[in-house]
Image (tube, rainbow, N blue to C red; front, side):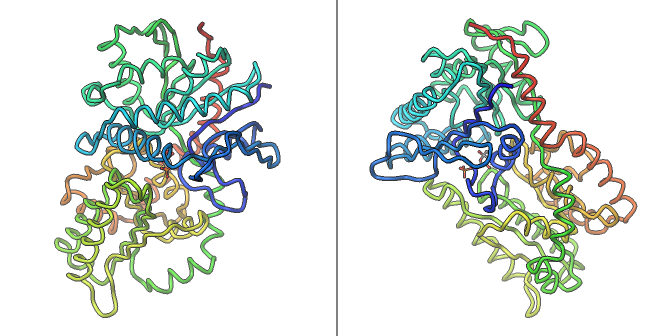
Length: 460
Ligand code: F6P
């Protein structure tokens, strides 16, 4: 069996006891644990004089190999091109997309650094699986170094339609580098269509068979592989998490009030401002909820060196303060807004307690919180998921209450519907959603991508 080599910007915590956060980390940890192999990427450390050689650490059947970044690389590659250009662009935020040749050069330089170090570790029959927008050029750079291994790439974010992508001065170079992989995977068919449309419209590419496209002189497999969660583990852990001290304390603090929960990185793509407004509209339009419903939004800060993230942080502080000032009573605060993260297991207990899972990104590749929330519910008395149509998850999860996050009043209506939904309908919707999560869990996702890579017909 070939060795699996996973490459991602962030490498999950090497210590098994620390909770991995974020979809990619959780998913790949599970994949490597089952299959064994290498996980290569950034250590998360920024240092004055980075060691040119990766640090290696073996944990059971996984070898972690990580590189530190210099301040300049961190600024140009991570804060710069990855998170001030590609992230906003791929999330349809042209208004926030910045472009500079300097950060683009830094992005290519760090990708080349990664490719060079990885190159020395690769064996001829390895399967290499590269993740996410930070590392689009890595495969092409490995090819230029002579590597002929099977190379797969999976994009965790949305892939924008051509009209958006064309705003990027070097769109063609980036798409060309994607075509150096043997398999390019996206979250949804919507993203595949956007990619294929670009190839056809902009560079004379063509579809040459089922899931096969030809462009830039190469033929590759393109498909959608909706990422998922460890459904069975979550079901089990959420039940036991209910009796944890933290969940009990949350329950005591709520009394008999219903809980609406949101859990997101503090990112402008998550629609938190509009979400707060929708909650305010719920309080205005359905005043019976005042004093009876608590909205807890957990939003750990992220990418704090990128200025836009501080702007959204200030907006949310103002908004939460405004809503609480307007509606709070001496014995009830409507919004509990927490800028901190919690252990995964604690979150599962919180999800299980919550009557409503509130997941309303303005644009999201998949959104695993939506899936985790559903998997964590008590099937006898499940809560209701209110889910944005712009999350990739909405395509599979049609039995949630699907909303348009820009329609604040419509979202308030959906919240009211969720809070008052009869038990039978809740059970019915939950069962339908669980069917989806059981038939496409994290293992299925991994196996489907792995199979596509295994069967990929290598192109020169
Ligand atoms: O959604 C894209 C993604 O790379 C996720 O896989 C991950 O959870 C998140 O972004 C992490 O962001 P960062 O590494 O910038 O904190």
